[in-house]
Length: 249
Length: 312
Image 1: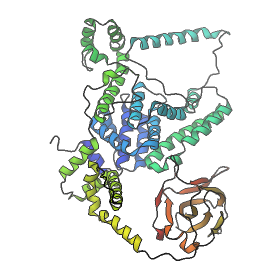
Image 2: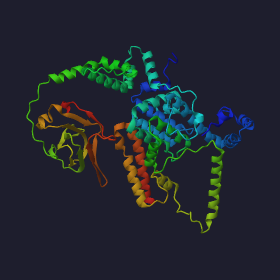
Image 3: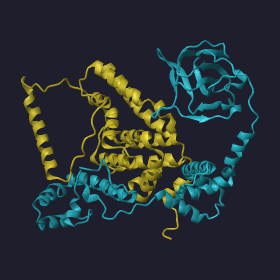
Image 4: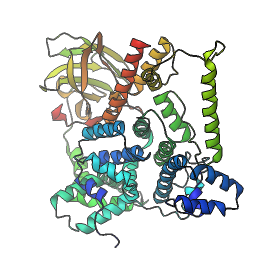
């Protein structure tokens, strides 16, 4: 009737040795591409998951489909993914999606919106999504900033001015906001463990134990190699952050 | 987030001049302010466009997928991105139709394999429904269960393999089976172990079971396939073992009555194996072990599959 030929993504699915893995990767690539480009960290993470999925499909090709916003392809991937990740399994997919969203340490509004969409797709409600997010990052999922309002940008500008003024006045003694300086690496490590810079050793240990348990790759073994690989990456990141803080913090 | 382009009546690809013109002629004070602050600044517009693209994608996908209500979509003022008409379609069904059309007799072998793999979840559904209907008719129940279109469509490949008749066959086989006449023996105590190795146990393994069935748990060396140990665990009890370091395949037989090591739990023995290997190893000062809980839990992480008795 309509188009007789298979689309690019349909052809990939037919060729794939692991159709679920290929579909998961397209959705993860869509998240990674939502800020305009897939950066190095994201690309590395995607190709590792892709290698583990053993699907025999080029991740570059999937990234290109995602960057072109091929909605028919994403639609098909959503159908395939949602038929596999039902009920209790849904949050495991959400963990993968959150993992790629925060790969660069930030949750952008576009990524935030996509996570919410995926949660709705898999029947995960707001509380469930938030719980998974808290488990992974130690903080609540923020409400996506409304970048369409003048108010948001004005507030942002004001906050920036305030903070620059504050730093100007901080040369004297009466600044009780002063904190010990932390390198950017330390700050990133604290953030990975869901902690504020300067958290105590005990807090670091507790947070590490909690996160390591949640992200232990063994938990994902029933979902196939690509899920285990995604979890391993998070797990390694958590362990590196912990090792770093134990040594230097 | 609101769709400023749509509200201004310009394309998201509009040039700065076009937007400026639209803003000037805009009569809505708030929209005018927002558009001026957001779209007329290059950096802000870039950020805005990223979110705009994501929400446009999501709006279109929601309409395609029929996600009319979404707990996570409410309250974000994103209604601008909702599509007026909901045309939910199943991309996977359309894809399957296309595959059929391309390949009416499924003659190309590789494509057929792909089709079967792709529709395998539907085949499972089809068979379950089929089995259910068979059971119903055997009980002279007159209710007819409507079969979803997808399952009827994809029962075909399964029937080709003779699966549809196997239901009746296996039922007959079961009836024809000679009665099992072995004497019932006393249940061994929990923790009764047969070890088939001289290596000393080092890593902890704890096995918990729920009441209702008794278990004989077996560990096999994954590389040699050799049996390392058998341990008996009565229902509702827990056993702690120490096993040699290594990677094992875990199998278990379960049932009510014990007929000895040859017949295990008799004809009703259920044989299962864990889908993932168990690895016991030392890392630094820590020895990694496992606690295995043998009953159904909703968020369990041990997947098991049926095992033919001769492979136990």
